[in-house]
Figure 1 (cartoon, rainbow over the protein chains, first blue to last red):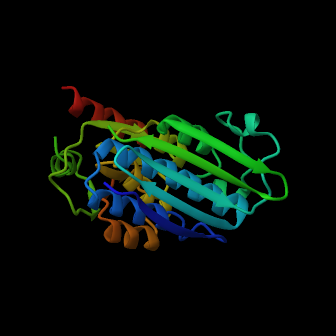
Figure 2: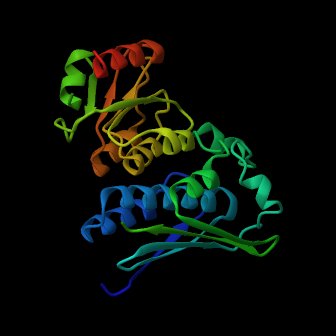
Length: 140
Length: 110
């Protein structure tokens, strides 16, 4: 299977449209016939990343690469960056604002969930420049 | 048990029922969306009082069998539209969350 590359812009602003990129990716992964569990894990990682980009970075871009062995999702934004990654990785820690919390977000579980459902996760961040979160999900 | 059987047994209100034959194998109760994504299992019945549009996307990503809005909460218009668009089974009940969870648990392990 040759590598398939998909690019999804993530709109910033409100959380109304959030999840559209993840929904589209999920449909494409289904069409590719990947295992159900792999699709679910990739979709949850992508959704959490998408929500993070909307809440914290006014949007960004997700690049998804699929080959026979793995799915790599690279979520890149030019937001404020994460000052303390270790703190951000703690379950329950969140800097999300009131609006996001009222909608049910901001529980401080986004990055921990991405770690939980991926086989490998890296966070490349610089305060004032932006953040790139990359997750890899092994197929089979 | 299928979503249809659960709907009948608990006399649930049907807001959108696209896949009535989908199996329900577990349950999850919670309103914080990332907790649901982290803890709910595939094919669960998800009990929540959260009724905004993001519930549809979370149910889709988590692959919940159905969403059950408890405590008589009604979905907002945008959630209804998205549930239909994404094929998410969306149900409701006047029961409080605890009672609905108790009844569901009884049906899952009789």
